[in-house]
Image (cartoon, rainbow, N blue to C red; front, side, top):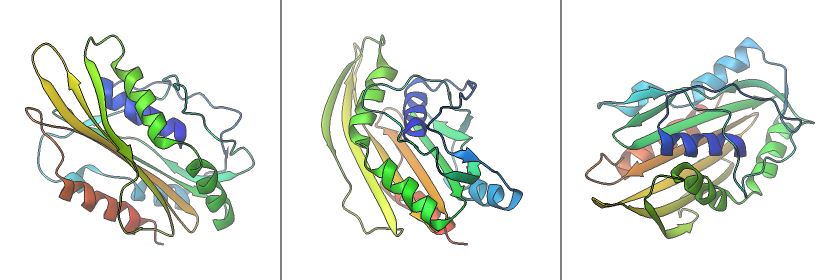
Length: 222
């Protein structure tokens, strides 16, 4: 899940639209995919129809990006995934929505996966990955705030984080936010990532982001 966050964040910075070959790591969960759990995982993530109107474009995330400092995957190699869905992600005029879901063999394993991933410093990871994604652009990045989100937990296990920032270039200064939500309920876990860039680009309204959180949380039920 940490690696997925890096992929989403760097992809949102690059808006590359190019798929990379996923490299299995020794710390990755074991895979015993079955059709029912795979369909469940695929149904949890965000779909195009969830986003409403607008020029949303499908983005196949680069899965071979290098993880920056502070974005280390915990060891989940003793756990077994029975469903796993990540792509596609979506972009619109500078903003980005990505998601992913995994179903584990047992509730105990899903809870263990959540606990191990949730111990990581997501905000530090996001800032490091954002800097990596902007490297060589010539723009100046300023972090305005970083922390968790004050909200009612939408799932039995839940963590979130948000970084507000501004990016300055020769022509303008643009503000934005990057936010992650990590959920677990029963055997299912999910991550939602939203990168919203302000005007003159097309930001994602807070109401839309909140609705997407509710959709993912609701789909964890089975």
